[in-house]
Figure (cartoon, rainbow, N blue to C red):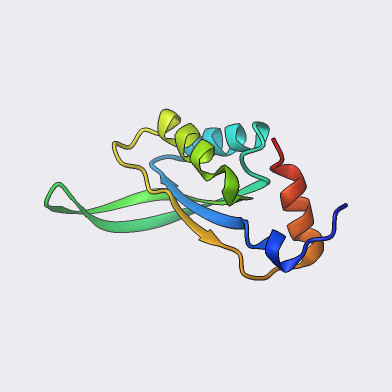
Length: 113
C-alpha cells in the first residue's frame, strides 16, 4: 500500500447524494463501487425539508455518503445524473482534511481507474 501524504489525502473526499428510495440508493451505490468511482457508500434513511418549485416539501429520502477520489468527481457526477430519478439531484463534494492513513490509502486504491 502506498503511503498517504498530506497532499495526496487532499484529493480524497466525501460526496453527498440523496435518493428518493432505498432501491435507487442501493443501485447507485452498487454502480459507483463496481465502477471504482467510490471506495465505499454508506446509505441512511433521512427526512428532508426543502423548497421545490415554490412549495415546501417534506420527504423521506436516502442519504448516500460516498467516499471517493475527488479527481474523479466529473465522472461520478455524470454517472449519478444519468441514473438518478431527480430532475436536479443533490451532488455535494467535501474534501477530507485528515483521516486514518491506512483508510485513506485504501480509499485511494479502491478508486483508481
